[in-house]
Structures are given as structure tokens and as C-alpha cells.
Length: 634
Image (cartoon, rainbow, N blue to C red; front, side, top):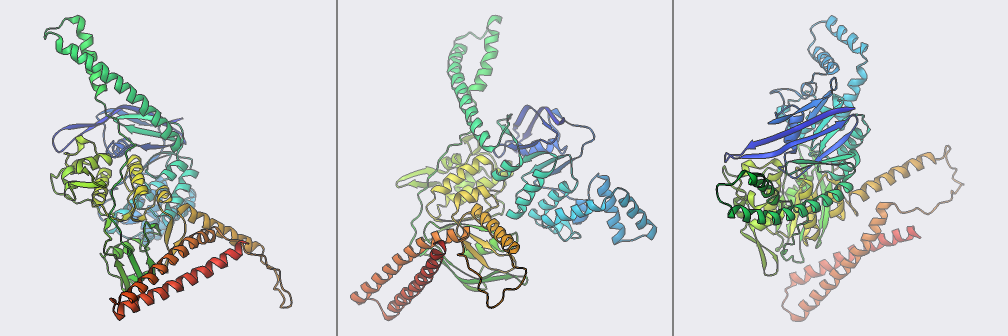
């Protein structure tokens, strides 16, 4: 049964330069009952505009949107708008849903009673439609999304919190048709996984824009691609989409090449004809315009590669020693120590508000620790991509914003690329270089902001939620760049696919304790280890003795098997011990050279001796742990 029909839809907008730019032309598609569909496309292709038109928040230039009669439709926008001064609960109950309106009226009467009779009447009506269970479900959804203070004014909330309120408002309606625009932005990983499971289990139709490939893979069954103003449909998962898109692009390129050859011939014919043409040639003149449009099509290249010549890193990169930090009486970080090695690639995970961004700000010197020390090496150059929006001057163009950082960048020894070439690598074609930044979409501005960070050519990259608002094509370009990046990388991201590809260990923020666990593995490894621990705990509980064991009894002890986490730790220890041995040998050689030359003073010799002793102690500790794990494996 058809729930949504989009028929011959067209939309264009007026730029600040007064030019009309088409977003899409004569697009048509439908979505059936229970069908879950993802909408993908590059930043600026018109995805968010299309969703707003379907949701009735914008009007198309041509065409129409038709929903089946008597179905409920809910929309969670990227930039939701709420009534001024409204509380969280009133915003969530801001709906035409009869049940929600009744519950809202009951809450208002409960908080500001007018009469006992009125309250009793409302309770009777709620009993009549069995809406108490509905209210419990609402509270569960709000709790899963981290919304607890229902009386707080929405005006006081951050952008990410407001996005959660909009998402909650859409979900509590239990709509027949749900429209979501980047729902995973500003959600932590646990909440994303809950949302993923919740939507998958609901018998609703769904139209979704997301860059989260794991989310897309699990929740949707079909993909609509908005590309150069047209809609292409793929009935399959993300891998199927990539395969079929590549085939479509190859076919289109062959058609464009053919049109270009024909265009050259027709152009020569047009030039040789007299101005007054006979009616017999009119069909050929009309066909010439169609050939010209086809020949001048530009396909977005997705196989761009970028290898930047990294800055040299010294032996000392970054040392964090016993740092702590609290905020409003809550301990965020407690006695944390870590020494970064060359090409360290780590991800940071934890709930929103756990202190992830606080740690990054202390690492980059923007925030001092309360105790402890953060010390960067002399050759360490940070590139820090934050969640703050790009700041630009009125009328400033894309190329100017990039040239503020650098005119050229070295990509290999003696080879350079210009700012314009760098822009093209990150999906900014030549015709966009002189576009005003004010005309860019939100995703395009984030991409430009990321590009500015990379143009600084850092050797220590810190990326705080870099995937927010980026399209799938840009994500692939960024991933390939980071895979070849030879410096250190710290990544905070709710994009699990992105994390899995790029990091080899994690800093896991422990809830409410301020402790940070160094986990050996990527995000999928971490989730697997948690599942194994939960399964082990259940088995132990089931096998627990029902009566106490007498002191004379000596129960047989079975050798403990290594958990997934311990196996990863065992593998990492071998590498760490080897590196520490090399470090110790270097320190011993330095001490020997300093003693022989006689140039070093007493303080330098003492410092080297202390460093050797500390390194030896670390080797002993890690070796003992390695032996302990090795015995458990036998």
C-alpha cells in the first residue's frame, strides 16, 4: 500500500549573487507501508530541502507530495524550531495527536490544578483509551535519549539537546510515516544503538537522511540517491548501492564521452550554416541543445586520493602525566597518564558530558588541568577540528577562506598543490571556488572547516565529531586521507564504521568515576568484549552453588580462558615491551656517550639514570602481566 507519492517535484533557490540554482528537477518516487528508505547524496544536493518539502515545511516550484489519507506523519529536522519560552515537556506534546493532547492537558492540570472534578474527568478519559501505558512509553523514550528535566525551557538547551527534543517529539507520536534528517548527530554511541534497534522494530514507514553507514545498513532496505538533480533508486543495502552506483557512473561517463564527440561535430555544422536556416534543419538545431547539455555534464569523482607530506615528529610527541579535572562538582578526569607514541591512532568514547572534549582541550592547551601536566614535544604541530561552526566574514568566498590558512601545501618532497586543487580533492569543484560561503549548505561549511585544519599540515590530528553533516562521498575521501596520515590521530566520533577503520585502541570514559580505560582494539572489538563479559556474568550466575562450600571441600579450579579484551591486551603487550626495550637501549647508549664525552653535567646524567630505571620498571610490570596472560592461554 502506497503511503507517500512524490510526483514531478522541482525546486531551485536564489543565491546571494542573484542567480537561480536548481536543486532537483521533475523527480518522482513512492514509499510503501512499512518500507524503510535512506536518502543519500553529496552536501548541497538538496536532501534536507526535499525532506522539508515532503514534511510540508517548504513548497516546491513544481510537482506535488501526496500522503495516504488518515496516516500520521512526524518529522525531526536538523535545526528544529520550538515555541519561544516553551518547556521541554510542552514542546514534546506539541502535536495534533489526540492522546498526546490529553496527556498534556492532564499534566498541566496536575501541576496547576483548577478543580478536583477536572482532574478526575481527565483521568477517566485517559483510562477510557488506556493511555497510561502510552505515557510510560513516552518516559522510556525520553530516558533513552537522555531527557530528564522536562520543565526546563528549551531556549536554555544546546543545539545537540534541542535536536534530541525534536527526535523525541517525533518518536513519541508513534507515527505511521517517520522522516528523519541526520538523527544520529549529537547522540552518543549507546543512544545511537538504542535508536537503531527501536526504529528497526517499529512497523512504520521511514524516510531517512544519514551518513552513519552501520545505521543505514541495519535500519533501511532501499536507498534513494539524489545526484545532479535526479533521483536514482537502489533496492538493496549500502554495499549493493556502491556496486550499482559505480556501474551507473561508468555508463553515464560513456554516454557523456559519446555526447562530447557528437557535440564537436554538431558544433562544426552549426558554425558552417548561414544565419537563415531552412525549416528542414530545425530538428537538428533543437537536438544540438540537448547534445550540448549532455556533453557538459560533470560527474562527481569519488576515487580522489590525497597524500600530504607530513611534518617530522621528534622522539617526544606528547606526555600526559596524572591530570585531573572537575566541573561543577563532577569529576570528569581523575589521575590520567599516557605517553603518545609515533603513529598512535586512538578513538575516544563515552557518554555525552563525560569529559571527552575537556580532555581534547587540555591536550591542545586551551584548558589547564587542575592537577598534573600535559607537555607536547618541540616538533608536535596540532590540527584540531572542533564542533564549533565555521566563522567567516560577510561576502567571503570559498577560495579566500582556504587561502587564509595557506596558498599551497606540500604533498610529497618537492611537490606542491594549490589551495584550489586541495578544494577539488574535498568535493569543491572549480565552479564553487568563488561561491560565497553564506550560500553553502551546513554540510559544505563543515567540509570547508575540516579542509582548513588539514591545510595546516599538522603531524598530530585531533578530530572532534568530524563526520557530523558530512556526506558519504566526503567521508570516503576523508577516511582514505586519514588511513595514509603518518602522524598521531585522536578521533571522537559516534560513527562506528569510521572508528573501526581508523583506530587501533580506545580511551573509554568510565561513567561518573572520571577514570579512563585504555582498551586495545576498535569500537566493534570493544562492544564484542562487553557482550562476552555479560555472557560470562550470566553463566557464572546460573552456575553459582545453592549452598555454601564447606572449608574441607576444595572445589576443582578450571583454568580461566582469556576474554576478548585480554587477548587483545596480550597482543599489544608484546609490541609495547619491544618498544620499551628499544627505548631503554637508547637511554643506556645516551648515558654511555654522555659519560665518555664528559660534556654532560650531573643533572643530565641523573635524569638519564632515572629514565632508565623507570623504563626498566615498566618493562618488568608489562612482562609480568604478559607472563600471567600467557599462562592462562595454556
